Amino acid sequence: MAGPQRRQKNLSADTGEHVAARASGQRTLVWGFRSKHLGADVPNGFLADYVAQHPGETVGVAAIDPVEGGHGRAAGERLAPSEFGAITISPAAQAFHPSDSRAVVVYEFCQERGLPVLIEMGTDLAPHTVLEFSRPYLLDEVCRAFPDVSFAISDMGWPWLTETIALLAKQPNVYAILSGILRRPWTLTRLS
Image (tube, rainbow, N blue to C red; front, top):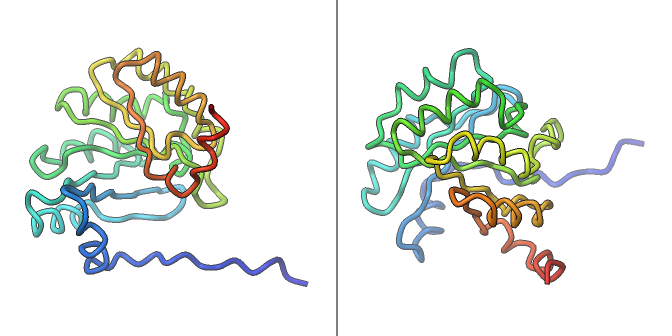
């Protein structure tokens, strides 16, 4: 007997659906994703074109995969700060430790240009992701080394919410993105 059937997630990137979904917001982050490890890529050029079509309404978040050979600085050099307002990385989906020297190149690039780093730390990822790299406490070393870079942790680091809270209390340059928690409101009741 075969394993249980899984529902396929809707992975479309329909821009019309995105426009309708952001209608209630004032500004929307348009988030890229790139992972050599998972064989996935939402091209940064696609994001830049979309942001250009919706000026003042969207902010582009360029995806960089530090694991791709020399990609960190090379990709960064191709990104104009006017095109993107932030960089996103995903240690678990891209299979690297947050303090990996290849990621340090990305943090240096962001520090030089004043770009925040949005870090996908949530666990709503593919089975092949490296779960231990999504622990929020692993960012403490990075935050100490780059105090002038703003880091935003997605999904408040779920399921390690208390690690994220500790990091938020300790590091003034760390923020939490709460949107992923909206799907799991019961998780916050365990913290009180």
